[in-house]
Image (cartoon, rainbow over all chains, first blue to last red; front, side, top):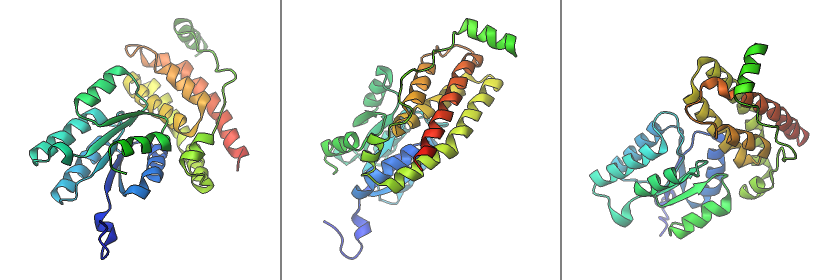
Length: 141
Length: 130
């Protein structure tokens, strides 16, 4: 239900983690109608944003996560996200839905991401139909 | 420099230029952007602003001998090219990423030349659309 007094309050929060400006712009363009999009360009930024959101009790419902990032990579960020959720007692259906969006389409990366409990894996190019298909399948759009 | 280039080319034969590959096809990108021509224009401007810097960075990393960092940059470039439909550059980048990770940084010298040539064609194509 939308909060009439403060519509922004009930909007789904989305974290886009992408070091390529163009990819980030595209994802924001696709996902903005579905929620408030925050951007992070490094793995460390992403972990900080996610941690801050948990502390503020405004957790992200969806995280779109690139793998090849400067510094901490996306696989490590995913592990850290699940660790933080676990420490905060966020389990099962309450956890953030994480979609890996990357140009890495090899089995090793795909398997590692699913082992670390990502919900979906999209190989670039970023296309609206692919992204929407996944978020609909996850029941968040 | 000539001798060095020849030695590198002999060790790692230059990938053939990607023939008959589309330089830029923005059809899918435009669909993803809900046919928003203004956003498309700003994305293509961003390509012109960002890509030369990225190519220069790769060249500098070759000089610095940092093969791992070169692969990260080429990977980013590949993702960007796939997203915008710059098929020729995406294919060259994809080929470069097939080079064994243990190969030294100089191995990527030939590839970066091909990327620069392909970028000039891409830039021309983008400017034609303005």
